[in-house]
Length: 377
Ligand code: NDP
Image (cartoon, rainbow, N blue to C red):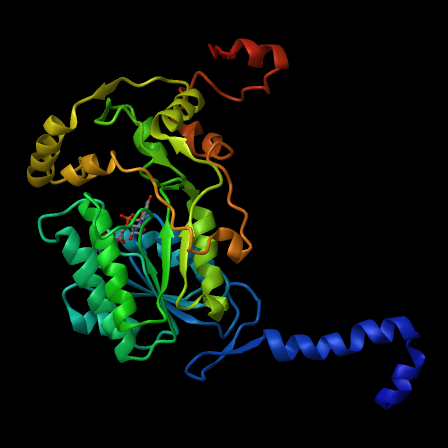
């Protein structure tokens, strides 16, 4: 029967609300045209759907990497993961369907390997960063020279989008080399590829973080600033969500985002939260900066596992600063979660086996700060 005849049978109200909507959805949502004119099929069919973007994620083997690789792969994107250590990338394989997560060996000084990683992609994320200098790479090598090589490859192959993950508190005149080199890295990225989206995450917390896990680990806690630095911690899942939204929204190109949590804490306040959640108090030793910096410098130089560095001591004396002109998580329609709402989730494994299945506290117990102790045997 003809459409007009069918329309005649549908009651007036239903006809107006259903028929045009079907056409609009197919036209506007399922096919996107990138800056270079490539049509992308974005059918929301989950990890096995065909089509979708091809994204390269440099630094995917780190803490934040899994939260973006997982999100992209489960929506059917093809994710290229450049890696340098076989074992560090294994967990990412299962994030996507067969053939969706593609590993390529890469070296930050090998331009050919970087170009190979980006040449077929629609978007490149650069998450590469280091908190401390290593034997083979200074902070400048990683944050400035490394960024330069990646952005040059992105510009050479005319990749549609480039998202560069920098850091909070970046400043070219900062006493910390980390913040200085991160600021220079941003400048290099924007000078070569002006549409670079810059993302400045605050200190991130999550299962594999270096914030809660450091405070909860059983060794002594050594600081230099009596834990007085002020931070605005952000949930790694929120940052992953923000990075994923950027792929679908081209208005985020050439913008700067500061991603930070809704509540600020001093490090001492976070330490107290961690102590309460993990049910143990750690010994805190404060060593003055003039002593701690040379100690940390030599430990970082001669001990081959991460033990802190002189620059990390310097960063203890710098509060988290936020650029008021930058966009935030709210501009991406994400409501950030607070640190204290997630500490139980991330710290319960640090509790002694004696504390298990705690019933909710009554008002009186909360007032008296009494805790249950379950005796098993
Ligand atoms: P991680 O230290 O966990 O991961 C860093 C990644 O960079 C790893 O994949 C690492 O590879 C790679 N990388 C480091 N140096 C090199 C190098 N010389 N050559 C090749 N690859 C290298 O960082 P996060 O995931 O925690 O952070 C992601 C980004 O966010 C980083 O740029 C970081 O500086 C920034 N940031 C993080 C904050 C946080 O609280 N975590 C706060 C503010 C900014 P490999 O696994 O092979 O070592």
